[in-house]
Length: 467
Image (cartoon, rainbow, N blue to C red):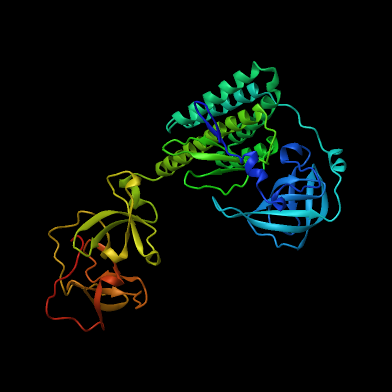
């Protein structure tokens, strides 16, 4: 095992020794008839796909076949059409699936398949029409990135800055790597490729795109720049299955003790250059910046959503908001505001009228005895609920509800159903503080219905939220 460390990234290279390779069975050794090229050696290739099949990622390509990775298994011995594309032109190549096996189980199951072309494919016909890539100055792209971040700061002055301390450290380290490369004549490939990675992130920020969506594009470009088999970002608790040489870089994230890892698989005996590893380390810092900006935007979106909510005193005046008093089965009460109450959800959302919107709580019906929709939180303490004070204008079925603790509530309902999660009822006394009441099914001992003339002569205790 060989390891290299820097102040902000850690590199570990794992490979089998020559002795271990010589001890492998003959059938397991390299029997390639054609030279295999990784994506970094195929600059003319835009993408590879299987016609009428699953999406694939290119592992390597030769005149005789292709090795791909996919999230759906390929059927061995089946015939498929591999499409190789550059620019606006696509070349279909018939191929047969030789093998397919599970290659990784994290962050999702992926399969690696080997496909043999039915006839050798000449790369020259594609390379001849492929456009040439122009170099990009990383210093200019870094300046654009800083300007984009500055504009984000100006447009979100009331929110946390777009970069945390971790993100700023990653940005400073990226700039230091650019400055270090400028003094080396052999760093031209690093400058060009890192400039392209910077442009990807800067363009997304300038166009108000999703910074998190930049991460997969960065990894795709790394795969095309460095002679690698696969490039993936994994959680610290996940370990991809790798059978070849591999390296990983730490990707710090604000608030996380154990960072993610940028994992790169290489072909056996891969001729890596110094700038390849430097580019991978620099890309890990860009991924940190991308994730940091995405987290900042998510926080800003939550703050804007909260700011759009009215003050607690204004909530009832907005359509859909109600003053609620919820009574638990154990007898204690909570008061707050509710919005779009739907019994089918099986719970009620309650907002504290004296606190910020983050105080919202969700209470399952299983814990509740009743939900009161009230006119006022204080009510009238001197109001007495009269047993015979029935509003003649009320429509619906008269009923008496006996709760599991023995308390009784009388009213009118239009929505009772035995299989429903509960039902609404109106109090007989329309002069009280309760506008309507929701009774959860789990809080009921039994329900008795009455006609309009059937009134109970004996006074019974009546459940109420606020008089």
